[in-house]
Length: 323
Length: 312
Image (spheres, one colour):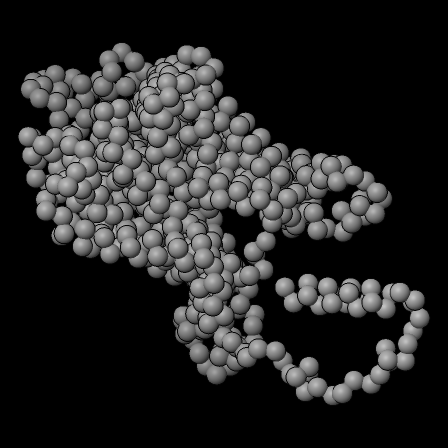
C-alpha cells in the first residue's frame, strides 16, 4: 500500500518538473534532519500478537470462527431448548415439514429434526476435535523424536510412517470398524490409526529446521536433556504450523465421521449423526427435501468454516505463503 | 536409477504385505466365524462349511495358505453370494468403476489446471477470487452431500438427468461431478500457486523482454513448470476418487466395485471385504508408482536428485 502511494507521489512530482526537464537548485537542497525517518516504524511485536492481529483483520476467517462459535453454542443448548427430545419416535407425526411445533420438521419415525441436528453437531464437533487432539499428541511426540533423534532411528520411524501412509486411510478405517462395535468412540480410535502421520511429518520438518539454532546449543551447554530441549524449546517454537495443521485436520475428521455414518458403519440409531440423517433422507428426498437439505447444509458449512479459519490461521502465521 | 526403482517396488511390496497381513488378522480377530450369525445351521453342516473354507486349520496354516493364494491372485470364494469367486465379482464390476474413475480423473486434471491457470493469469481480479471461493467450497462440500443435492436438483426438480444408472454418456455427468469436485478444487489451488511462482521467475522476464505475447509466455513457458506439483497430487487424487466412488456408486445405483464393497461390509462377507480392500490397495499403489515414473519423465531435476540419492 505504502509502496504504491510513494510511487504515485514520485510519478506526479516527476510530471511536475518534467515540463522543461531542467535541473533546478531546489532539487538539491539539504534536508533537515528528521529523527522519525531513522526510527524503526512500528513497535516490536511478538510473533503471536502479530499473527493474531492479521487473523482478526481477515474477515473470511473471522466469519468462519463466528459460525463455529454459534454452532458450538447451538450444539450445547439446541437440544435443550427444543420442546421435543431427539430419540422419541412419534408415529403420528412422521415426516412433518418445518412448523411452529417442529422447527426443522420431523423424520420418518417422527423424531424432532431440530434436536437431532444439534445432537449431530455435538457428535461432529466431538469427533473432529477429539481425533485432531489425539493426532496432535501422537504426531508431536513421534515427529519430535524423529526430528530430534535423526540418523538411523529417524530413518526407521520415517519408513514405518510412510508404509502406514501409503495404505488408503478410509480402507483401514472401514476394516477396523467392520471388526469393532460401531460407535462414535470407535470412529475416533480408527481415525487416529493413520491420522497422526501428517502431523508427525510437519513436526519433524520443523524440528529438523530448528535444532541447529543457537538457543538449542545454549540450552544443551547449560545441561538441558533432550526431552527438555524438545518439549521446552523446539516444540513451543513450532506451534504455528502445528496449530494450522491441527485446524485443517478437524474438517477431514468430521467428513470421515459423516462418510462412515452414511455407510452405516458409524454412529448407530437412535443417536443422531449428520451422515446417518443424510443417508436416511435419501429414500424420500423428493417428498421431504428438508430432511436432506438441513443436515447437508450444516455439514458443508461446518467444514467450510474450519477450512476458511485454518487458511486464515496459516496466512496469519506465515504471510509469505499468501499470494 | 535402477536401484531407485527397485527400492520403490520393494516399498510397494512391503506396504501390500503389511496391509494383507493386517487385513487377515483383523478378520481373524472377530469373535466367532462367518457362520455363527446365521440362524439354525446344524453343527455338522457348520463343520463342513468350515472345512470347505479351510477355517478348521490352525491360524498360521490359514495365514500361509492365504498368502500363497494371494501370490496366485486367488482371492477365494465369496462367503455370502453362492458360487461366486471374489476375483469374479471384482472383474465383473470393476469395469464400471474404472470407466467412471478414468473420466473423473481426466475431468479433474483438465478443469483443475485450466481454472488454476486462469486464476493465476488474472491474479487478484474477479476470476481469481471467484475460482478460489469455488475451490474452498469444493474442498468443503462432502462428495455424498454434493451427489444427493445434485440428484435432488437436476434429477428430480429440473428433470434434466437420470437419477440413477450408468447407461448413456449423460449418466456420467452427475457421478463425475461428485467425484471430481474435490480433486478439481485441490488441483486448481495447487496450479494457481505454482503458476504464480513460475510467472515471477527470471525466465519469464526474459521471455517478456523478447517480446513474446502473454499467451505464448503462459502456455509455452510458465505452464510447463507450473503444473509440476499437480503430478505429485495424482496419488492422493486416485485415493480420493476410489474412496469417493464407494459412496457415489451407492447413491447413483451404479453396479461397480464400490457398491459391492459397501454390500460386503454390511453383509460381513469377509473374503469379499479382504479381496476388494487388497484390490483397491493394488490399484492405488499402481497409481502412485505411475506418478513417480511420470514425475521422473516430466522433471529431469527429480531424476537427477533421486539418482544421486540412490547412489550414495
